[in-house]
Length: 120
Image (cartoon, rainbow, N blue to C red; front, side, top):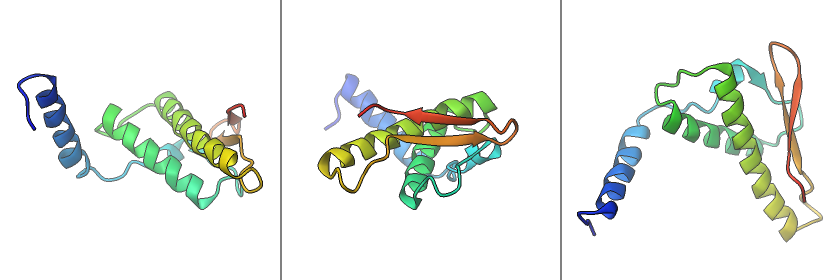
């Protein structure tokens, strides 16, 4: 139900996000201009999850898709941290199957490997 107060503003804003931002193509692989995932460390689910989260953040913060390397690093670290939080919850549910508490990525320019960790 629409209201003349905050509810209306939120309904209107969410409708804009839903309709307009879906038209923008995916920015999921944009971070790969500057960084790469280590071979064999990320599963296909990790990659898909991180790409989708990165794409969503990019659409909200940089709708044009134009960003600097440090902006991409910040969004990539956040996307990886959120994926690790999901993996942590899966670990709590089934300790035998899920052990990952760290994912890393490599800077293509410098070769530096940066790890994102969460504590169990």
